[in-house]
Length: 361
Ligand SMILES: [Ca+2]
Image (cartoon, rainbow, N blue to C red; front, side, top):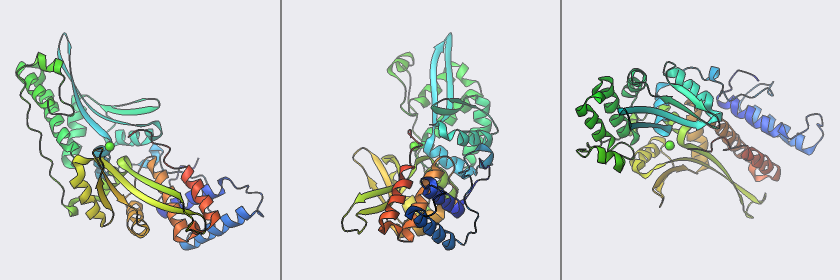
């Protein structure tokens, strides 16, 4: 495989060419299908002013050596989407505390975890098979690598409150306070409002527990939202959808629709509204299940705002492949290929290769 990552428009075109030709016998250049693909290939090539040779091994840049050093804001955006901060209290001869920073992804995203580990100076461990986790649990690494980063490049979602609580616990551990009764109780008081709080069993062991206040998370001003943070957040929690819908009003019999989505817990509704203002497009809606969605459906917004944004501020990891496929559908729609039967076939083929990589959130 080629180790050179394709980025931006080049990658889109490589992706579309690769998919278009993937079920066409290259030797048989007289088929209608080949001619049609060739025509689309030429249109896309001319449109983007790119020169052949084109067909080479496609790489999305998922290889760790291609990822290079991640942008710090990207790292924080990705942590906002995918990481967890937790503290476990257990008894083994004495009360013990284990604080863990963790990111769990599908195994296809192991290179992204390796890039994150490299970003954090190689601390922590990556383990797992179908699902892989990056864990940092040494107090020293948490203080010097994770906390140092997050204090400089802050989180933006409500997860920040959990981070602030987690940080207080880790700093107490760093000062060995967890080895004293007072420090241990202080940690339990903090843990009482961290994530799901403390179990009844633990509460029974620490009857004097007085939960601390959960810190308030300040909402960023629209102009303070960092584009690379948004790219990292999207790499974690964003989705690029292609919908094919039977519709006889269209001569091809099928209507193609694109959707860009970011889904969060409804506690981050105001942040999602800020993101909508930042992009100056899309809508924010709340579901009965307590989720909030930021969606962009309008083709011109997708083509003129969303795609150029992520061309400039790169997403990393397996989601890049979805983005490239999605972009290639947008390019086909731009040249009206989706209004023809053959164009629809290509789009269905591209769609069939999308959104397979991530089975966990
Ligand atoms: Ca998430």
